[in-house]
Length: 288
Image 1 (tube, helix red, strand yellow):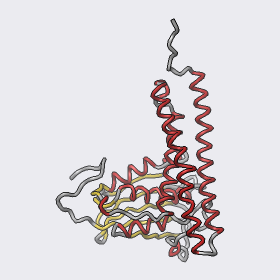
Image 2 (tube, helix red, strand yellow; image 1 turned 90 degrees about the vertical axis):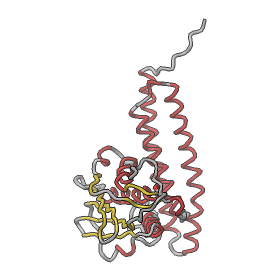
Image 3 (tube, one colour; image 1 turned 45 degrees about the vertical axis):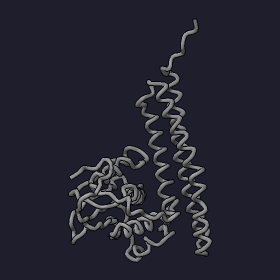
Image 4 (spheres, rainbow, N blue to C red; image 1 turned 180 degrees about the vertical axis):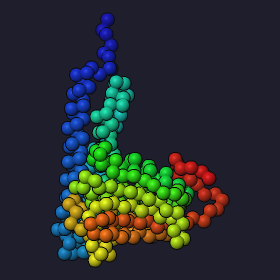
């Protein structure tokens, strides 16, 4: 009688999977960087003609979805199935890292697609959110390059409520985190502090502040112009305009203030919601 093969992974198989996973993680990071460099290069190439530039960027949307998102979804599904069939792989550190990198690449694609296509915000999807829950979740979910990078980010301040589409708020926070991490990437002691400030001159605010090199005063007004990148490698010049457009749709605004050699801070200002019966809360938020 044939013995049914064991689904337990041997140490050799686990080690091989870990090695393969490490190579895969590195490849995902590399391919994500290549994708964003390509997008940035195409934007620079089309700078001279506004119509050509816009059409070129929008034509990338389908390619991004097909070339990056679809394969990653397939790989994610295959890894999940493998974990179910080989119980000893549960909580495998290398697999968890691979999941994190996959989710990070999908984050980049989602944000880029929303910005490129100028995705409208559906006001019917607005929910009453706890700002601190949203910020903490975004900080936890962000696809950091490593643990040391994640430890540079902290959250403080007083919680407040806001009316918004949860995904839009998270994407704005991802954009601001990405920019802040880029600003401090060469600074060993660099840090990012996200502060929540309730009822400041009649608005609720979330500030994302980094201790990077700062931005010159004459540059700040240009930051929210479409395709302006400030020389950032792989930058698309789409993230901050997306944040500005989204904040206006939410009835608020985004501003930047900075001091060269000291810090840069982006401030999201949300209107104080008028509480009324029937408001729903987003999944995972606290009800009052």
